[in-house]
Figure 1 (cartoon, one colour):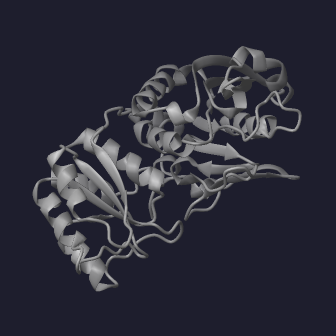
Figure 2 (cartoon, one colour):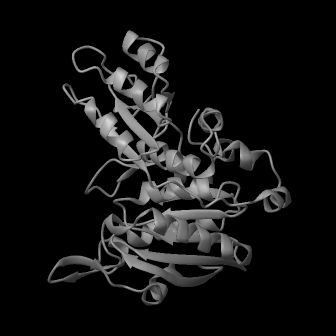
Length: 338
């Protein structure tokens, strides 16, 4: 019988009403009766990692969670992480990098209504997560609304709908229908497709280091280029810019390109993505993009915001060498980019 560990971090799924609004309050052991209904033929174990609204989950929590998963993964055939939806995609993305090559499934899930609510989506999402965790397909995934999404491709796109998450610029890894759970193994990242289970265990060396000093800028017409100088002076090592359209950055009047160039000359890693959710960047099309490339930016390609930002944090935790940083971003490490 396969052993599956459920790590509870809180979030809406485990929330209760209080005088201050919904707060996490249901412990994992209190969910076992419901969870056993959806996990026949599986041995479930639960652990309360923390009890937080995911808006209050921070990078140090990602590292501690990744460390805990790496510590116990040899004891289980799969791990489910119950998590609040607000920052779930950031957590699943960072786990994808920190736990790259993990030989078992790690599945992050949550819900839009508490498991205590009679019409909640909680049990259905847990069902998908538990059975994906038992599938034997290694990697980090998100299970939500009968979809299985690669962890570094998930993004929350709706605030209230049960269909809250989508896989951005990449097919769903799996779906649950009247035919059961169908998994498309051909869409697993190369690190999982090209290695056997024994090779994965042998080569699994998680890396937990990351850099705090990163910043996200969403461009808007008229934004002051001085923010780049302020961030450089404040000691930020990486800046992710969400540019216009294909990733374009303005250079007239408010010359943001020149400000970017000053930052890169001072050793700041500047990653350029798009504000558009789908299809990614191409900085070789317009003058505004080509000037950005000449200023030293690295293209985010088709990465989600969550994956781009967490990859930036993670890469800067591995090296400070500009050549190595660029090489990391040119690689598809765990399915985060084409």
